[in-house]
Image 1 (cartoon, chains in turn brown, purple, yellow, orange):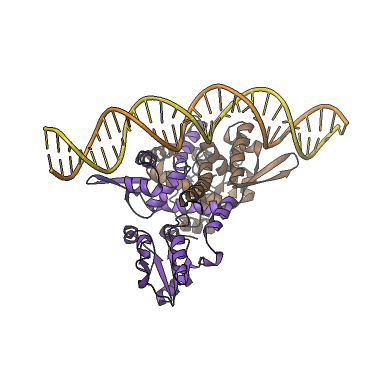
Image 2 (cartoon, chains in turn cyan, yellow, blue, green):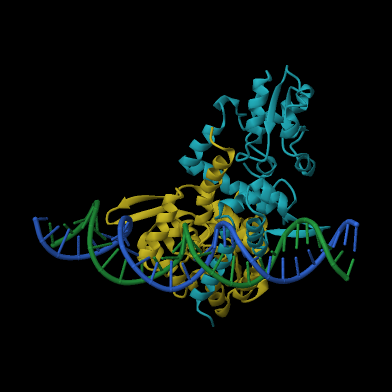
Length: 216
Length: 216
DNA sequence: TAATCATTCCAACGTTTCTTAGATTGTTCA
DNA sequence: TGAACAATCTAAGAAACGTTGGAATGATTA
C-alpha cells in the first residue's frame, strides 16, 4: 500500500492544477472575457491587449486544466468555458478579492466617477423597476456578447455605437449601464458620456456572470 | 488620466493575488486544515507533514492575501481563516477539480475501499435518518476540531481512540464516518477498521466545510 | 535578567512559470 | 495544387516561486 502522505500529495497537486489557472492576471482576464461567450483566439488577444502567441499559451493552460473547450469554425478556433462552474469560480474569487484587498477597493473607487453613480446591488428592486419600465437597463458590450446572454429587460447599444445612437434613449428615466463586470471599463465610459449629454445615468458593476452566481 | 489598460492590469493583478494562494498544493492543504478551526503553526506543520519554516512561509502568503488572521496565545500563534468565504472558495475549487480532472477522479476512486461504501450525497435523507437515530454519524477528527464545528447529530470519536472505544458504537445500525473532507484519509481508515470489526460502516466524503457551502 | 521556546525574517539554491521569437500544422480560398 | 491565414508547438532567456538553513524577534518561564 502506498503511503498516505503520497496519496494526499497527489490529491492536493491535482486541485492546485485548477488553482494555478486562476493565479495569473492575464488568464483571469481571458476567463472574464470567456464568461461573455465563446470567442476566437484573435478576439481574446485583442480584448486583453496581448499577443496571439501569449494568448494561445494561456489558453493552453486553461485547456490542460479542462476548463475550456474548443471548436473549429472555418479558419478560426472558438474557445468557450466548459460550464457555469468556471464562471462561478471566477466571480467568487474576485468577490473575495474585493472583500479582502484594500488596494483593490481603492483602485475600484478611483474608477467610478462618483460613488453615488453606482447602483446599490439590490437585484430585486432593480428588476422590478426595469420590468415596469421605470429604468432602462443598458448593455454596452459588443452585440455578440449581448446575444449570447444578457440581463433581464436589458437593451443593447454597444459602446462603440452609443454616441451615434443616443437618441434612442429617454432623458426622463434613469439609465442603468452595465458591461462585462466590475473590471470592464465600458460601462464607466458609457455613464460618463451619458451624464455629459444630460442623461441620468448610473453604473451597475455586475455583469452577466456576477448576476448568474447562484447565491449572493 | 491613466490609460485604461494600466488600470485594468492593476485590477486583475490584485485578484490574481488571491488566486495565487490557491495555486500551491501545500497551501491548499493548510487551508483545508484551517477550515477545521484555528491552529498553531506547529500543528499545521505536523498535520501537513512539512517543516515549520515552510509552513510559516506559506502562512505568510495567506496573511499577505488577507485570507487568514493571527492571534497570539501565550507562546503560540494561532492562525484562522478570516471568514467563511475562504472555506467556501476552497470547497468550490476542489469541487471543480473533482468535476473536471479525470486524474483526480481516479485517485479518489482508489482510496475508497469499495464504491458502495460511500454515502450517496443526499444530505436531507441522511440528516433525517440521523435525527431518528437510524444511523450514527461519526466524527473521527481530533476532538478540538469536533468542538469547533461538526455535522448535526454527529458523535466524536477521534481516529486515534477509535480502536479502544469501539464498544461505544452499536452493531445493529449503520455508522456514517466523516473527517475533514474528501482528501483526509481518517474516515477511510475508520471505515476499514469498523468493517473489519463487524460494524456496518460507510464513508461520508464531505467535511464541515463542504457541508456548509451555501449552494450545492 | 537570562534561558527557552515558537515563530518569523533573510539569503540562497534549484525549479517552475512567463514571455517572446522562429518554425510548424491544419484550414480555406483561388 | 499552392498561397494565405489562424493557431499551435518548441526553444530559450528572464522573472517568480518553493524550499531550506542560519540568524533574529518576541513572549514566557525560571
